[in-house]
Each structure stands twice: as structure tokens, then as C-alpha cells.
Length: 524
Image (cartoon, rainbow, N blue to C red; front, side, top):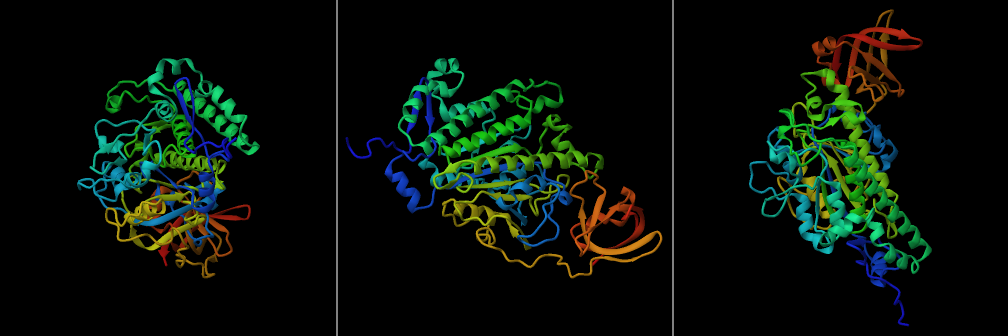
């Protein structure tokens, strides 16, 4: 028998009745694959996750600390378990106007909406590396499609500046990856794509090593989980109510449990990368004018409505709650990818993920200091476990240019970029803002008033939007709970993230003092 005749090519498909199932990387695949794994970097995949509607800056911003020793903010708290796997980037400004329509396309191209060149950075990458995979790139959307302003729904634009609409049906995405559309009748008879390749998978299992068997079992279990998730999402969907408000939403997209739809999309992204079906994916988790209700997580309101919190502060807790939930979905994807072997490392190590919003302040639609998280190892090129805030604002296009080069696009520019961004593939080593000089403490206190100096923060644990904390040099916090009008009169919000000296009335609960009314607040 010819030596190594049992080996199979990397692009082997398990074929059956109307099904073509791609495989993850296995030991049984050809020596060329094994050799490549040991002698050069594994391919790096690019994923862009866009969450519209901005954030509450005070709940997003990380206050104090250093590049590697920092405390995650309230909105970022769900990422605490994967803190060493993320890079939070701050003070990157984008160009464009502060409106809903500008945000998604500008986020992907660093180019103003009205300018002709909308060629998005994911498609620039796909045009360089997309011919190496069965599917050049994938565009997904989990949110409702807003017909009145079609630009809101689009992330990706090709090299002729034409929009690439995202696929909103998880089942259609699954079928594109695994099913033969010419055999549709037979597919409908199958409970699972795995039923269609049962004979082929059994034959393969008899040939592979024990390690390959474990990989295949994990892979097949993941496929069944995705199929079950898609089915559950469809069962929990409710038909569009064609009232006046919803008439602007594309009726082909059901308004239902957005949470299950997003989870299905994240699972499909994982499967697509695992099988090397594609190496470039963009996904609209929530558009910038999102009309989806988050009643599945206890918020019976539209994301867009609660994002306008300045004129209606009562909605701010719900706004924070939705954004906190979205960061939790990023943690889910990180943990999912980390659990999957990819050659000698993990799928997470060989992926590069940009998660963020095209605007920062949800009410003001600001395009400065965008809320951004970079994660995935980028093939070992990205230094994770850090918070990098640039002392001077940098063009957001510089980040896109850097990410493009990490995944092998060899780009020289995009939008208003001026060069690659330092501090992504190496330590930034910037001086920390607001360093503690040891003077943060209660300066004086009498029977009912006190004066204290420290770093002002928003409470991480509480949902009370008027709950501030003054961080002192001994790492303790002085609580500040003041009425809205007291806050408004002193413009106290402007002090968040800065060193401030406050004077005010306080009360004592046990041994803990809490300021309940401010008479003065002075920035250092």
C-alpha cells in the first residue's frame, strides 16, 4: 500500500444526501497541512461585530489604573472573566457627521458617508485573502432591517462601492455553509445535516486517531447545538405586527428573540472559522437606529429609544443594561473560540475580532473616542490584557489599517489613516492619566460636612445612575449619592474620570460615610 495513503486533503468534504460538510483541521489531513502548521503561522480570520446606538460614556470609560493594571468599567464588567483576552482601545476619532446613517459605513471605512469611496476594510481584506477559502466573505445581520434608511443596515461595501446586504436568517447561513441547494427536497427530509453524512462520518471515524475522534465529536456536537439554536430562535419568533411604527421594518425579518438570533449568528461565525469556510465575516448585532425590543432580557423598550438618555434620564438604567448584555455576548464568543483547538493553538488565537459602535454618546451621536474592543490573538500578533488610551486623539482609520495588516492584507492606507497605530501589536507604555500621588483622601470632616479629594468614577455595581464614587489613595471609595438637580447645577457629570475635590453634606451608615448633597466641586 502506498505510504500515507490513508491521509486526506485539508479541503475534504463529508458528502451525503444533499449535504457537503466541511471539516475542522485534523491530524489525518495531508502532510503538507501538518508541515505548514509547524513551519509557518496559521491563517488569521477577521471578524467585525458592530453594535449600534453607542454607549453611556460614564458607564463605558475605564477610569484610572495603568495599561495592564486597570478595573473594567460597568459596561465592560461581563468581560472580567476574559480580561486577559481583550484590548480596550480609547481616544480614537472617526470622521463624518453625527447622524445614524453615517455611523455603520464610516465604522468600516473611516470615510464620510457622502464620499464616494465606501470600500470597507473587511472587503479589502477579503479581496486579498478570500480566494483561499470556499466562501470569500460573509455578511450577517441579527437586527431588524430598517427600510426607510437602508444605509443603516449595511456594514460592508465592495471595491466598486456597492453595498453588501447582510444575511439575516441563521438557517440560510447554515445552509450556505453545509447544504447543496440543488437537493432541497432531500434536505427537508433530514432532521440534521449530520444525518445526511452519517455513512461518510462513520467511515472517517474508523480511520482517524483518538485525538481526531475527540475533535470530530466536539465538532458534530457543535453543529447539532447550532441547529437546535436556530430552531429554537425560529420557534420563539413572533410575526411582524404591521402597525404604523413597524411598517418601516422589512417584513421578511421577524421581530422575535433577538438574543437567540445573535447567539445563533455567533455560533455560525465560530463554525465558519473552525472549518475554514471563510476567513472574513462582518455581523450587525444592532443597527444605529435599532427598533428591537429587549424584552427577552427584561427591558421592554427599543434600544434606540433608551439611547437618547440625556433628554430622559429615566431610561438610562435600561440603556446600560442592554449595553452590558451586548458585552456579555462578546464574552460568549471569546470563550467559545478558546474552547476549540486549531492546529497547535486555538481558534481564538488565530482570529482577530473588532467589536464596537460607530458612535460613542448614544444621544449626541458623537464620532469621537469610539467605544472599541479588540480581541483574538491575531496569530500571536496582538498584545492582549490591556487598556490603551492614547494621550492625543488618533484617527480611527489607523486602527483599521493596523488590523488589515495583521491579517495579511498588506495595506498602505484607508480613509483618513495616517499610518499604523502603535500599541496594538506591542505595549504602548503611555504615562497613566490621573496618577495617584497619595493625596486622595478625606481632607477634613466635621459633624455634617466633609471635603475630600480623589478620582471620580461611576459605581460599577449599582444600577443607580446618580451613584458616584470617589476613589481614594488607600483604594477605598467614598460614595456620593446626590439628587439630579444638585448634579445638574454643579455640572458634576463633567468631573467623571478626573481628579476632583468635593465638599458636601454627608450621612453615616455604620462606619461608612456617604455624601448626599454637594456644595462645591473643583477639578484639579
